[in-house]
Image (cartoon, rainbow, N blue to C red; front, side):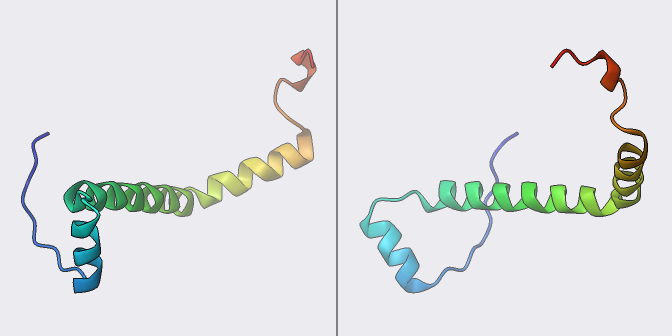
Length: 73
């Protein structure tokens, strides 16, 4: 996918420091936003699927792991 321009407001000291250090603020912001989106997607998935996760955990606690008898370790 292509790149798009967005407006972003930063603390002036943060921006000045990044410039002085030669940091690519666009790439850093992109990486941070990408990581935050990944974390939020995972959190939302766990929230949306909590009933199934709990149900499976209870089943394993009650009956053991499926196919456990076939484990070789």
